[in-house]
Length: 295
Length: 334
Image 1 (cartoon, chains in turn blue, purple):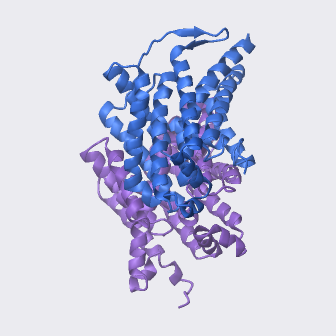
Image 2 (image 1 turned 90 degrees about the vertical axis):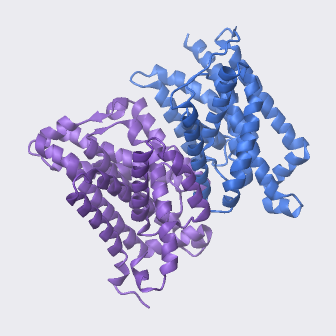
Image 3 (image 1 turned 60 degrees about the vertical axis):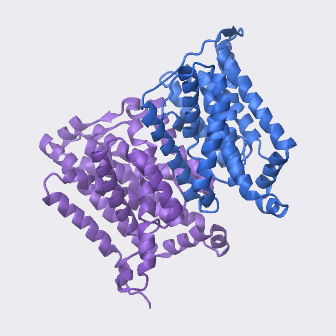
């Protein structure tokens, strides 16, 4: 009985993990290229969640349409933020860029609060369910799963097969060397920041396809923290590492929930949050380059 | 010019004058005490946070966790010890002591992992500390779990209800003033000693400092633990003793860390007078904004932070210090 429950939970964790992984690729991309940690990460995901809400409730369209909309909005936000502030902070001490991204996050949260208020919102997208023997999976979650994998694959091919993508890879490896080879590093910074924010905002939509409730201006903080754990799991700065880190994290989170629920006197939901923090510290302690890191 | 023993502590004068002026205004102008207490609280957290952030340049996003465990130290002391015969005010002092002990222990645990890391990795390691500790308390149902600790009744039992209300409405704030003063003294002593010079070298270039034979890890740990234990005291006096309750979601709220960072950065990181100046500017602006447009403080502060970081990252006192260097006033500014 417990075995079936655990297996079902793990399957759910794998599906959620793909969404988590995709949601962390933007963070890792920005860190990889600019060496800037986006501390406002969750706030950008929150913007994506509200785009999904607006497309579904406001326009009456399927949330799938919100993915490209959120991506374009995210690219635009990234472009504006890069040219107004981030551009000047790349070479500054960490303190400056950390605080700047945090401030951008607050700015987004407060702007959304002005429009939608601080209440929780949700939407109800009914597209059927699939019984998988050990668990029942709503189709919306499967769409989110497939969507995440597709986006990750597109990004993978873009990075390895196109000129722009390989140029970015070069900047990640060695920005000075890339400059010597004639790559416009300044443009690579702008592109990767916009792309990273675009991916992050789009991932907010996928997240609401998995969890369509609890959408509020302040929902992002939890995901910032999870994204850090995932990014570190996969080796900070590697977008694909982040994707696999997400899968591992989804399994760990749901698996540990099932185990904590067995122990009397514990609050399993809060314990999984504590557990993910422990994972973060352990990895930073033992292997800061991440489980998949090679350096 | 070699600085004599006394003149090198001159920069304490403007800081003490600021605190004294605040205290006198709060005492003599009716209805001002609440505002002054808030400003003193901001001065104290800014001054305490500056010991670590200002001197090392490392960003500790989990700083509020030390204030949180400090608040728990006070709450636990009052809750568990109030029935001890004749304990009286001792319960409060034991609470402050326990706050320092808990904050030191937590900072040792966090520092052991996080201080081995640099820059971005350090910030990531610390950003989860407050959340992690909060969920440990809630998840393992430690120290009252998510229900927190409410201890006004116990405090009144230990001190008598009249003294208890005096302590929570007046003496708690006086403690905060004293802690702010103490933090300023620690800052100047550190600045004028080997610790300060080592940390300056570390902040400018950690690798070079290491090569020069400076034990950077040792000095980082000293600054980290000092800053954390003062935070524990502030949590105990400014939160637990003042409010006579502790709830995990409130005392581990990351926005307090952000307020610390804003205050230090606005005033000037690594300067002595910076935190009080930043605290006064930030506190008064926040108070004023909450009166004229309630609920929009953060909406206005976020762009201000961005402007400060991009346009003048040295902060107010950083600029003043540069302008006044070498003049007669210069030796009062640090």
